[in-house]
Image (cartoon, rainbow, N blue to C red; front, side, top):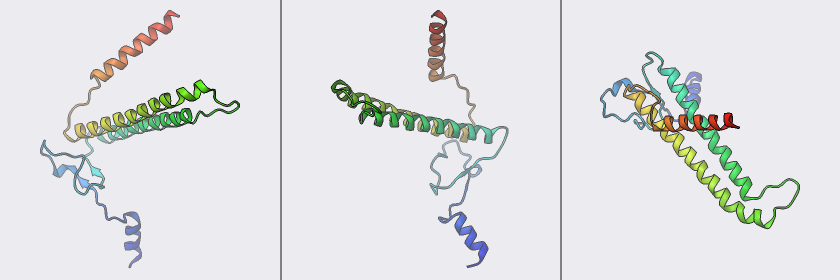
Length: 154
């Protein structure tokens, strides 16, 4: 085995090749699961595509980080993590439901982040304009305005 072949094998031991999405220009093509499944997707870089994909990945990683934090908090609550004192009976009784609630919220954050990531990749693949004006954005905006009004009121 030549040295360059060995280095190529180390770089890609499963012989995964990138998939060029320009070959799939039909609107009904699903770009989230092309064959082979583990291959990276190559999109033509027009305008700000690379920047948008990186931003989409950062957003997913933020959702993942939030999910991990919430799961760590849920585990700490469930095991009644105290540094100095032993947990009281009420704390032990409440720990399981509150911990499971945080665990469910953690899974919800992970599912929401993954769904948002896949939906955005599909929009990129079909060249749809991305405008953040859906109901989620409006709810967050309204909640921010209400929270700001409450802070200013106090």
